Image 1: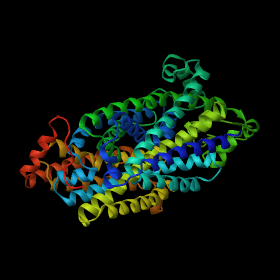
Image 2: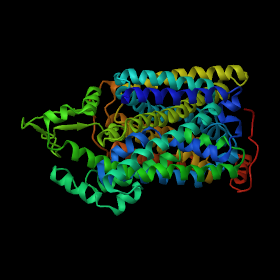
Image 3: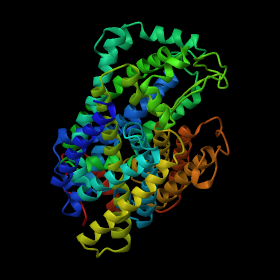
Image 4: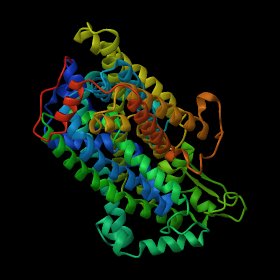
Length: 564
């Protein structure tokens, strides 16, 4: 049976499971639509958080980034895992105790201001839309390779599937679907890693194989022979400044991601929120400790398989032809010597590989069973779809709950609010699809840009809202506006943006800082402006300051406040 048929079978089975779960757990009111009724079990919530967190960037792109960047690629591991610890320990329990539906909900009530709520909702839309574009790109790549369609059509197919899960199920349906998706994506990631580890090193545990075998030495020698940079030496692809700034942006951005934070509202108590974080971190670590090994194995296999291989021989390899047809793999015998060379010199390199196909193509390159190849495809889809659904719900909630209900129509009925929420998911899917077809970078990079926006706009407001009683509505509003504006403007200038018709960046860097780290400058601006403005204006009302004091007392939970 061909890989394509097996993949189609796997995809149909897994999507049948997702559809059944989404229908079984469909939302019937706004509380179940936004926060799953606050009754998700702790371990299940941990698995859903992990699936929400391990997006297409983690599953499809991260190992590819590590494969290409070597040591420098570990910034993604340090930033994303470190940031999750920051979120779990510093913010999540307090936000759960506050008891709201969304991040803009917290900011609007904490800063007693609909203006602050509105700018936070706008920031949520910016973050989520940028993030979901990467997921749509990942879905398009999987469908392009395994269903034989172009990436654009693959994105459109993904749009329809994601819309179904998000519109019908809301947070309750999405949560239970993500539990199933976590199981599928983690199995799909670990099985090929173990198989390749055994094949290359004889050690079944990828983490041990990377450390205790000679694969790293062999890869380093292969890269040097091919004219590439040494794999395990630091700061060869990124400067020390950019490594630091990017790691910080990913860490702090993690703590400001609205779709992840909302997950801590879906459990009953503060204790459950803390333990959800513990379980999620355990589940996440399974993939994140495997990714460096898989990236190393992948890079070695690619060089070993393609470098100096005869043109006629490679042109007859089935997987080469399949990936070439997607446009994500290019082979060009530039010097007409009858073989393909991998080179660190751009004009001499004859092998072009998109970073986003490393994980998906590795089982084929390694000659693994078609069943494993199909499983990886299903896992990639599970990773992309689970995160995309959560992001779409975050955008929908920002508009339907925080803007429409909280600001424009306080008398809206449950039915009206659900209708607006579902319409906004439809609009958000269309926007996400456009940027998935015309992304400003590869999957991992696009996601990293979203983290920078979150770091500059939402994280400082949440942090100061919890730990600075004196921070007021004027400071929060000014901080979000300046941090968000600076970061978005800089990203537009530093990246090619299709909607503006720019094919090359207008500027390469800002003070030596690349686009993926610029969010930290935006964050600093936010803190400075917010702190200065709050100290120059009247302090918050006494009841707000007392409320913040009570939130910081680590005792149990309390019922959600206000009318939702």
